Structures are given as structure tokens and as C-alpha cells.
Length: 130
Image (cartoon, rainbow, N blue to C red; front, side, top):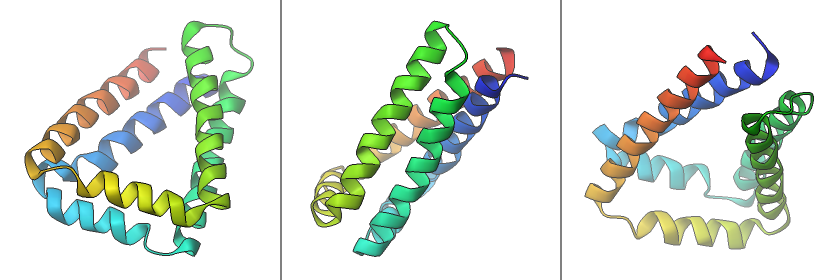
């Protein structure tokens, strides 16, 4: 299994596992996500995890020259940019996240959870078949 395939499987499973609770308990999941972003330190800690994931995505896709590798590479760069925003401006990032998460109704959160679950499982399945 290539590093790119392994990264796709892990990312797909992370997406599915982190968004599936939105289907069952949207309000509880939203409050958990908002609690994870409650302080500047937590925002910066989240940014470190995003940097690690983005770096692994860039590393795994660098030796490949396929379209999927290019997509993973550019998504990794986007994640690094987002993490930089979280580190440099944690208050503004938290306000943006709070406003965004707070604007969704329960039905929309369930729908987003279902879509993300399906997408994550498809990404993981594609990684297994790569």
C-alpha cells in the first residue's frame, strides 16, 4: 500500500468518524466542537494537529504525479494555510467558527453529517483500491 493510499484511508476514516455523530446527536456534537475551540490555546492545539495532517498529506502525495495526488497535495497546502490562520489569529478564527456552527439548524447538521459520512467512507474505499 502506497503512502498516498494509506493517507487517503486515514483521512476518509477521520472524516467519517468526526462527522458521523452529527447524524445522531447534532446539538451535542456542535457543543463539543465549540468547546474544543473555546480558548486560544485550544485553537492553537487544533492548528498543530491540522499542520501535522497537512504535512503528511503533502509528503505522501509529493512522489506521485496522478490527479488524486495533486488534489491531496493542494488540500494539504490549504490545511497549512488554515492552520496558520488558527495560530496567528485564534480569536478571529474562533469567532468565525462559532458564527458558522451556530447558524446551522439541527436538520442541516444532520444532513451535513450524513453527506460527510458518505464522503469519508468513499475516500477511504478509494484509498483501499488505489
